[in-house]
Amino acid sequence: MISEVIQTDLCIVGAGPVGLFAVFEAGLLKMRCHLVDALPQVGGQLSEIYPKKPIYDIPGYPSILAGELVTNLMEQIAPFKPGFTLGERVEQLNKTETGYQVITSAGTEIQCKAVVIAGGLGCFEPRKPSIANLEAFEGKGVAYMVLDPEKFRNKKVVLAGGGDSALDWAIFLADVCSELTLIHRSGTFRGAPESAEKVFELAKEGKLRLVLNAEVKSVQGSNHLEGLTVSEADQESDHHIQTDYFIPLFGLTPKLGPIADWGLNIDKNAILVNTEDYSTNVPGIYAIGDINTYPGKLKLILCGFHEAALMAQSAFARVFPEQKLSFKYTTVNGVNAF
Image (cartoon, rainbow, N blue to C red; front, side, top):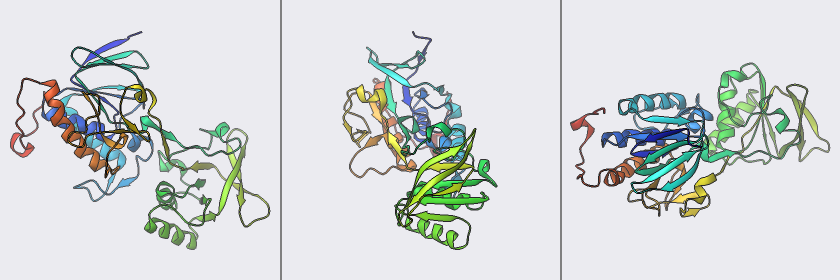
């Protein structure tokens, strides 16, 4: 049942940083945007996974917290008055005479002239390790991401993983937790070499405990996590580690969901696009950010910003087919609100 009907120029599926910046680029060209995201807040992975984590590769910012970047993006797009439908997943996409009809899981209908898929965390879910009793303690000491590091201050925390996320959080939390342990099933890490080197240094300094060539077998507790059982390759028997929190950081699994049924060309759970304007094989549908793929693709926020700019230039022709687009710099034209 349709609960609400919204009219707009561009429907942006995904309210992560790239989706938000797409509003700015579209707004400069007088296109109105409405964003839909399955998460209850804007920001995508920046808000959901690492809001307090610094980012170092945003031009003009030697360092900026992920949450602060989201705040800045929201301030930047405020003059263009975008609409938001949060906590609802896009379920249907139907072609209309003037563009597309998008329908969400809660019955919200968005009528638009073009669709921009800017998938962030809404298209991914954490990889959960196969550990006995793990799901029973989700929200009770077991988490798959770090939202607020202060939650772990002066607590016993066990991290598991060998990629960049596990290394980065091990470095960050070393000065936050009363006891910090990093468990990895191999003797070497997959993440950045400099991060791995820093983790080994922290272990030598006694700021964290490294347990390599090991795996967590089970978790225990009553109403809250109290400990876990670890199996080490060079030990004959398993041993117990007391902990308040266990955070397995094994990355994210792509989940296209209903998007997979839209007739788009897909390669390994990513949408193939034309790098001229980041359009898909379906006219009027674009894909920008981590959800798309093409030769040389880099999953970086700044690359997504570039994709959003070129997408907007192309979408203008669909929204205003009778108008000629005249490219102008913001230093000349400024930012004119609606």
